Length: 140
Image (cartoon, rainbow, N blue to C red; front, side):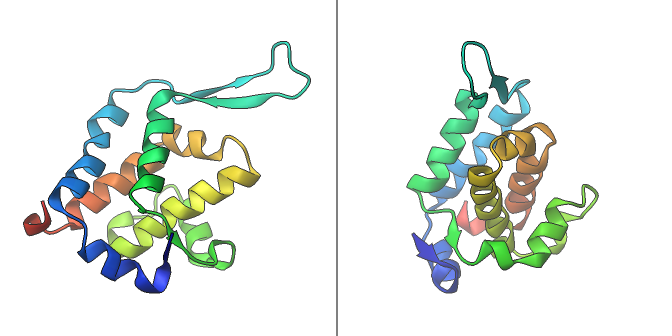
């Protein structure tokens, strides 16, 4: 786990292979029609079953430490961004884009299905696309 204060330095150490593996999710997400479903049959408590692409993306973010650790619950700007479908993600920094991933991941723990919803409404794809525009060519 990388603290937010150390995250920019952590990103500087990422290889072009790391960045390309992250961006390889873009066409996979674009070609996916369904990201999850609520399962309630034969269960007294329904749950959200994530499709393999969602699980793979989440595992990748965790394994390669793309999720900075910070007080996400107090990050008011992040809440406003996630609640504003027309917000231009190109206006925020690379670090803030990754902070959005952390916020989405953490919110899903308290609101099951939030992550799947952010795949379905295009937010995850928009974040990735914005990151790809911002990452300098020499990193790739």
